[in-house]
Length: 317
Image (cartoon, rainbow, N blue to C red; front, side, top):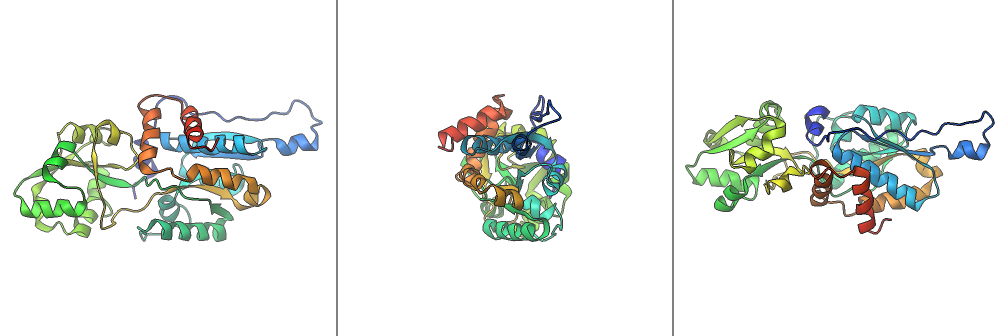
């Protein structure tokens, strides 16, 4: 899959990153109880919109539903920074994607698993064995690659799936335009692999590829300057431009479900954290995540506010 910068920069929001809520002692004679309560559960996250929302979902759910002192490390850094922090005990949890855990974090795998539950169980078991970390309940949201279509074009052609797209091109002499970023266009697990997996064959000659920067892809497709394009499944610009996501019915793209990744000693010592974290994951669909991302990335609402209001609406708070 693409590097973290490419995948995740698309949802990065402007402005400052949430700062760490540190606890500084004012006396050299702190009591044992005070020391034990100092940021006993630190919640981290990566530095882009979706991850900051997820981080605050965990932070707010735990703050409201446990007596523990919860530390705010939301916006800590990238994938490697957060993984090293939770692995070493600098933080106690952050949300990770199953696809990232499988393909990017050690021991890393080249194979692709497209069944969500199978992938979840494999990374859960592997991380418990290899790292003494465990995944709690995975959210239904899947922040993977998608092929998006202009809404008018999709309505005109009736294309709803990637298999439909192949069939349409075989039956029609129409030439269509595909907007792709340079990396997706050239990667074997991107455009070339997709064409081979779905058997586009000679019909690929009917698709004119436009090389478009990642930040403009959604607008280019939405405004009809391309018929289809590549994007990410939870990006709020899918809603902004009313784009149609073509179903990956033959399961080419990897799965990227999000789930809290927690230190096992932390969970054993604080079993009360399991229920609120699982409840925060439950029902967090791709469509719901797009809406939450939209409120932060496009409507410019603070991610902590968005997370708290969502938890209130869903009965977690």
